[in-house]
Image 1 (cartoon, rainbow, N blue to C red):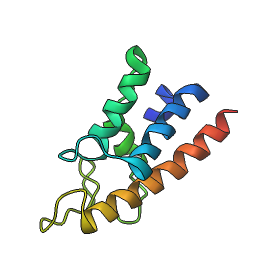
Image 2: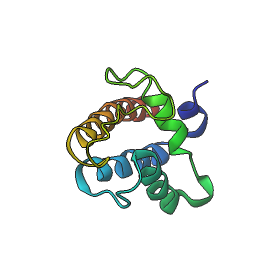
Image 3: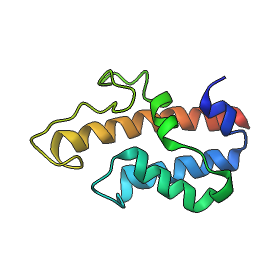
Image 4: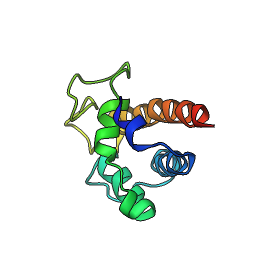
Amino acid sequence: MSYLKENCLRTEVADVLIDKLMIIRYGKVEVLGCGICANWNWAVEEVLGDKFISCYKLVQELALGWPDHSGDTVMPIPYNPNCHQWEGPNREARMGLCDYMLEQLVDYRSALC
């Protein structure tokens, strides 16, 4: 069984994961010095508290089929050292990965109903 299926058994948890990832995708990134995993993890932890889910593990799992995957399970974003991680091609790659993961989470959430 996948990490998502083991730890996200209720629609309320799926809703939190989707909501917080959408804020990163369309709203704001809390800590510009960190990537998707850390920012998503902190946002989810604030809401779920003791029902904490590791967004690091979720990104590893959800990113696997992403067409632009770097091949590194820990760092799925192909990194361009010529710009900050939330600027230029690095930002575009992060937004693409967020879109890809959101599609999967929305499908998963729909299947829970």
